[in-house]
Structures are given as C-alpha cells and as structure tokens.
Image 1 (tube, one colour):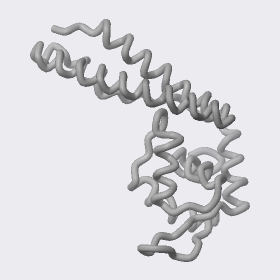
Image 2 (cartoon, rainbow, N blue to C red):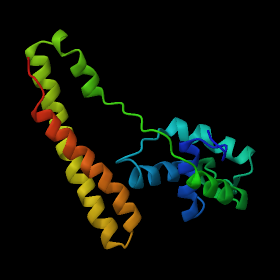
Image 3 (tube, rainbow, N blue to C red):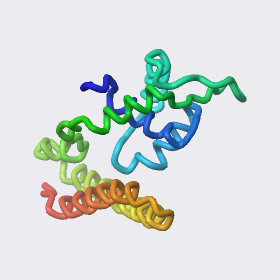
Length: 171
C-alpha cells in the first residue's frame, strides 16, 4: 500500500462503486465482467476488503436486502482515496504464469504430459482471446474507450501466450 492506504483490490472495488451502490455479489459480478481479462479478484478478497473499507469510512453500508445482502456505497472519502490511488505509481507488474512455471521443469515431464499441457493452454488462450475480443468490440460500441483500451492488454497477452506456446519445446 502506498500513500492512499489501499491495496489494488480495495482500489478496484472503490472504482467499481463509482457506478453506484452494489452488494458484494454485484461487485464480484462487475469485477468479472469488467476486470477479469487482466485483473483477478476472488470472492474471498472482495468480502475481506468490504468491511475494511467500511471501517475506514470509504464506503457505507446500505439497508440489508434479500438474503441479508447489503449494498455498499462510495463515500466522499472513498472518492478522494480512489483519486489518490489513481495518482500513485502503480509499481512493477507481477507475472505468475502456471504454464511457464511448469515449463521451467519441463525436463521432469513426460512428452505426453508436455503435449497435454500445451494443448490445454492453447485451448484456454484461444477461447480467452475470442472472448476478450468480443468484450473489446462491445466496449467500443458502448463508447467505453478506456475499458476497451484496458481490454486490449488482455488481447495482446493472449496473442503473446499463443505465439509463445508455438515455440515451446515438446520434449
């Protein structure tokens, strides 16, 4: 955490709440819809961060709804904190690719394991690329140029992964 005092997950929640009050489930769905191609958040992270944000006065709880779900609304302090977070240096990327990790130990795999690993990864990246291209198209159609630009990162990532997989040694 830097000057704003919030971590990236908390900041993402504050950013999503600019669209209006949402329950934890709605925030999770919005994160999946808008951020998942390039930023992962788990349900446990969302539900862990919301009470902390409320305790800090960055969000406020609304009245409980069906099944005791509670909407969270962004406060003025939350907006200021999010603005500070936006202005901070984002730091360095963290790369965690499970295929690359396994490839580093490729000499310990059988040829069939490697072939299966690459086939599964190729299928995943091909499907993900098609899905995120559709998201880019929809974001552009809706005039969401910033969302489209962020999603273009995911397009480039999946294209790069597919290109890299073509050069991977198969034993």
